[in-house]
Length: 72
Image (cartoon, rainbow, N blue to C red; front, side):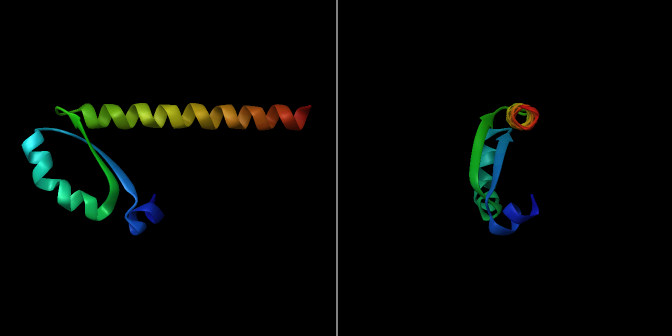
């Protein structure tokens, strides 16, 4: 979010031509502490989608566990 951006703690998952990634990596490290090259065009987006899905599953599990605990 905005707080992580201000603190420079974002993670960038980047897809594209590796030479172009290397050319912009220094700029990305100004905004994020973790910059990962994922491969060809589209792979950065795929990695981000997978990461978001994993986080969503974790949050759903946490919410369900809390709901069960409250009901029990």
